[in-house]
Amino acid sequence: DGLTGLANRSLLHNRLAEAISRARRHQRGLALLYLDLDGFKP
Image (cartoon, rainbow, N blue to C red; front, side, top):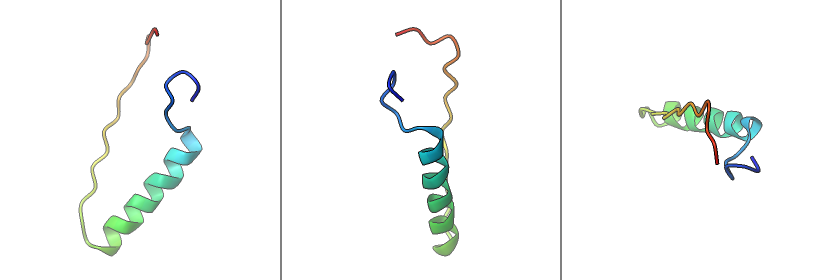
């Protein structure tokens, strides 16, 4: 994303799928932190 410098939704989906796969394979937990930035002004 140009404003935040964060990865886009497609990359997030791919990385999250990989992390879920890895956690299942190693029988580990997985945490996800979600921040909603509605109304964010730079």
